[in-house]
Image (cartoon, rainbow, N blue to C red; front, side, top):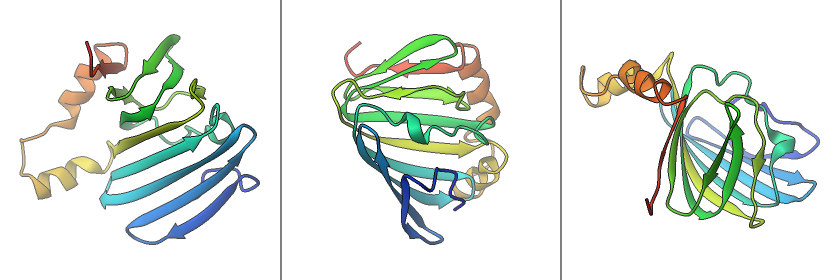
Length: 158
């Protein structure tokens, strides 16, 4: 996997065809991201941060044509997306299209969560091969998310 992060703060712990692990030494703490390459165009990412933010590693270039699904397992996640504040609490789930340049803050000083990154240029073929054609249509999912200002939050406690 291409290292898109700043080499001054990043250590690549493991990089092979199935997993890529990064460690980040940040101004306000540290963090780890482990990318599991599930299928062509689909990654599962484990995020584990003990910091006030991870703004130093915020490089969203190349994610314009992605569906990003984040689940907050522990802590809090705060960001501005399309000029709106998003807050994720434990158990919350958010679907976004792309990753506009935005800031990632962790108001409690820690955040642990999972992310699914779906490359819209590649993933539909993988989904069709694994699940079958016409079962999941990513274009329909993109339309539903875009109809809601490019993000949808599902709260664990509505």
